[in-house]
Image (cartoon, rainbow, N blue to C red):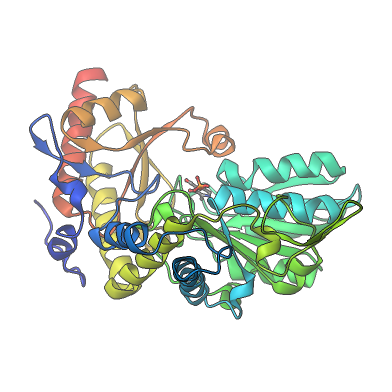
Length: 414
Ligand SMILES: Cc1ncc(COP(=O)(O)O)c(C=O)c1O
């Protein structure tokens, strides 16, 4: 190993919390370098969900018996933890959804259909995940609005000085971007974008799916009107996410999903909607999943985002350095200082799927594909890339194993 970590977190102590590390593939310890797709889960989260299912489970906001009240209290405690996690002023603004994708669709449909028209502009970026691209493209088409993209620089960062030019011929009504790119790891100064949007009377929507696991979030400091994230990328379970929105906007919006729990009164003639956040939470909530999200928030707070960020930064800088030493490897994205723990690359003449398969034989899991970012792939002029992504349980030895696998793939296929 060519580097000694000076991590401020104790990776070995953290690794003891993660049962997935007991897995062995092809006789090798498992190196999971696909946390950007979904993170692994610590025992603390698994135990919190098990405890909830075992001793507090009933439907929430329904029954008057004590167990149901316990379930409701657990759900609302998870909402309060989620509120504090993003420094939102009011838990009524925290809507539980299935994931980031559902959160963004909620805004695109429930806000977009009633607020966009043929004179208006919808602005996203070339760096978006499909979840923050396709809903806006679709709603723009349905409402007759014009759909525009902020272009990227060579290093995979947003050309923010192009915003004025892009929006010369229409009213900008919504700007939607990620805070951290899932493909390149680029961290964007979204508060600048939010200020720019607000100065033109537009709203700013933040896709925080890749930011929530790594960066402390503050909806005020970021200047968001809406922000969405998923539990499964931040040590929590799949099936729960949060959409935060400013109360005054949420209150003026029509509901997105209709049915049980989201109503005030249902009559033959007409139905009226419940209060926030219930108006946007039709049907049974992701109960145990929300509890798991709350436990994940506690877990990350205990480790500390400074320590997580410093640890990931070291791993990323190390991976970029080692991979750049291999002839024929192209690295995409900004320097380590301006990216989260994500490294995308290609080996000249070798298909990313072959690279991922060679690595899998060595027990190293990376992602190969378009990463739900086909517009970005189009821009880069490639069909796919390899992507290694790190989290608090990743260690430098795993970067070394990645680099050895890349060299082997090159020998086999190039
Ligand atoms: C930047 C970004 N946005 C949105 C999503 C969608 O998240 P989910 O699949 O949890 O809805 C992802 C998932 O990879 C992502 O990385």
